[in-house]
Length: 126
Image (cartoon, rainbow, N blue to C red):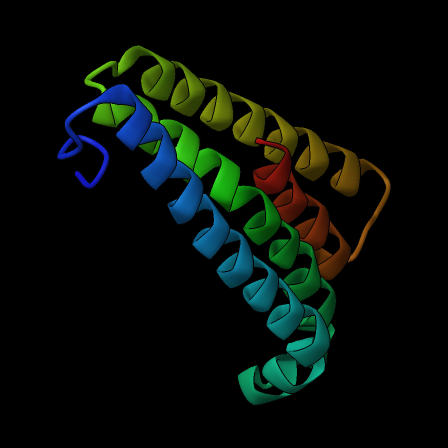
């Protein structure tokens, strides 16, 4: 919405850059919070073994500024094709990785925690 409200393409680029910079800072803070606080979060959840899953999820935050601003920019110039295509590919990769990890984990007798961590990493890959 913010990008769509801009009058010209240069303004759209400028606001995108500012939004991206803010999101990068927030993403790094979220990443660090989850990486450094994973033990405390897992303990608060009642299962210390969730620490590795929390850490694997944290990596996704580092990619969010690129995804958010990229999709938002194209939506702001009323071109929905890149957003739609990226969402389809994201889901496709995520599901393939999760199913592949689950299959591999069962065949190799991984713990549910190791399987969960790798499955969550699939979301990051997507």
